[in-house]
Amino acid sequence: MIRTIDLAALNTATKYPSIPTYHVLDPKNGGLIEEATAFNGDVYLTEKVDGTNGRIISFPGGDYVLGSREELLYARGDLIGNPALGIADALRPLADRITPPTSGIRVLYLEVYGGKVTAASREIHQ
Image (cartoon, helix red, strand yellow):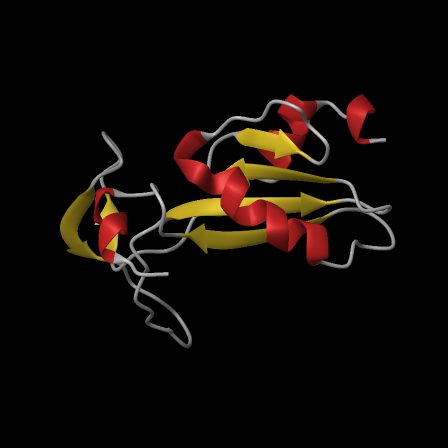
């Protein structure tokens, strides 16, 4: 089934969701500006691990696709995957263990750290 999917459409439909930030994004370049964002309702503050975004897209039957924030990197059983930042290598063991959905697709959004993900990764002891 996975071999017949339009990968560009799958990538677009499952891209990492935008996460609201405290500062408003500059419409010209996407950077942060000093103006604070007004939030309604409860606000939860978290500290982001110094890593990179990853996603596991799982299908009924156990097939899956692994991706970064922007692109698809590996599909279950691929002989050649994109080694970008070690994301596929880090997510593959988890993707092999999770229970696939019974219908539709399931997308897990994760933070990948350690290995060669960021310049500070050498400071993380696994």
